[in-house]
Length: 312
Image (cartoon, rainbow, N blue to C red; front, side):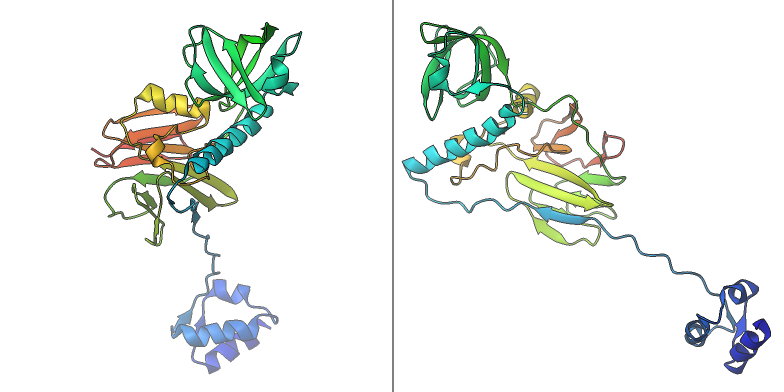
């Protein structure tokens, strides 16, 4: 059999390497003979083609187009914000009742509401059913925060024993692919994925613009990585940025609100949060890699290791 194979290749003016001869069978003879002709080599040495690894697939979330807002639009926006954060809190809190029912209770309760205003002894929360004053010494609660409250009720006032935040769970795990991201204001890059404040560039250098905030998902080897890029209107301290993750909201100024949707809601826990700011620092909050920089000095983010290195 092998002698006949060698003869057929010799007729075409092609010699076979010993390794290639071992790979030829009756089944693939015609296919290999065709490859030998096309190789135009005096000695045909066949190497099995390795399947190409697919490049990461990059997608960018497109927010609602900016519109001229009417007073009722702001109401819809805050309702969207409340509902999104309430859904997160409901997974953390059992036996939740409405605010209206909470203040009429004669026993300990749990409720969820948005902070409407602060008072001398605490704050007022509200939902679609009504409002109630919460007596609390917590100094972290601010206006428009959506929180859960557990405690006793007396004279229709809630005495908070526990404040529950939408926060990231300590048990949350990230599964990150083995490649590096570059965060930079400059668009020149050699390999990998580059993210600027305005766009993301893949391995093929293809540019995809991103809004502010920019939600980017990168899919590779069945692993999805999420990057959130945000340039706040005002400078944010490291403490404020960490509080955004605890509140699961970017807490924008009102002039950043563009419609009734809420792109500032951190409904998906990002693997990387890039705050575009002239203050440079890094942190890791419950497995979320945080980078604060203006991009003037590129930051290399090793996803698998969870490390950030500035390329000074």
